[in-house]
Length: 137
Image (cartoon, rainbow, N blue to C red; front, top):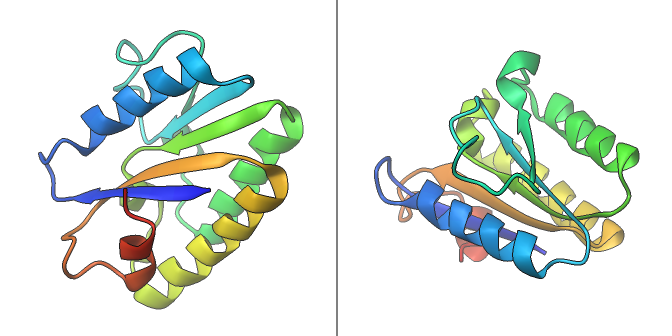
């Protein structure tokens, strides 16, 4: 399952994501991973969740992000949830075509590997790519 949290800066996306991380840690039978551009959530999420500072890897492209997600999963098959905060801070291409291709791939990966993804995306809900609206919480 893939879900998105859409909204403009300051609309409470990260707070909602943190609440979902806490819920997942308390209820999941597996491991929870949080990926963000920097370590701003260090004291907001439970220590049981694995926090990955993706900023040190300078991701940029969707191919790199796919590789990072696959790498995290290949290192731990017990992952049940992956949360990504501020998606557009990780990737450079915001075109609808690129976003659609990535989220289509991610939906297939999530289903195949039985991982729930929740991703916060800073964008106007009305002008967001269609796939992001379809996956919105």
